[in-house]
Length: 321
Image (tube, rainbow, N blue to C red; front, side, top):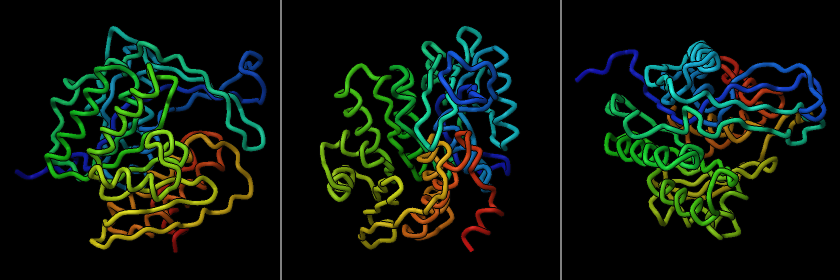
């Protein structure tokens, strides 16, 4: 069966939220004016891949409210295929409020997402997905933290994409406050990571999830459970790779890209994922993938928004040339 030209070749899923970023520094209780934007780790990656020219689909739920309408319009304006973005008339769109950080500090963030439309995602939301059209599925550990039905959806998405022959990436994206216990978080996310080809934890995340201390040991933990490659984010120091994507087992570290001024660290890991995933889909080597991941991650921390620093393909080509 031929694949329609418009069919998404990459699919991401999770919760997109309407975000309000403070226009001035200070406690949220004191701020009078905010800028409206999009928030969500999964959407950051989807938008970043769409900006690089891939046909990216987005699967989620939003409420039948103005915030849901805004998200759909904003995501479609970024080039995302929203045929699997469903409207839930019974539950609201999630919201997030973010402080304006100073001197590169992590900004304080407050969520209004409990009981949101996206937290009611379930396997039924994937019934109409044509998995045979997919080249790649990107997943994070956030959806399974939202609810039991979201966890079932995550398992369904990974299993069906793997059965269809798509490559799979998994970023744990830990949100401990959303889980009932640390043990449940570890067990659930490690089981999902075992379904993926490329696992992308941060160093602190890897330590918490595996009980191992070094990048080498963390990588071995996931390689022994079925991953083809483990790419560990080391923050400003760069990133570490261990795997056998080219048929040759190798491990190495790629140094980070120096940044003159860090404005906002939120979204840096998502930018890194955009770089790694896009490069591997482009057929680049693992070393080139880590270089691109470090590069896009460095762009993400130099702007206020979560995904405003993600480049278009032409800009990326300039930076990589």
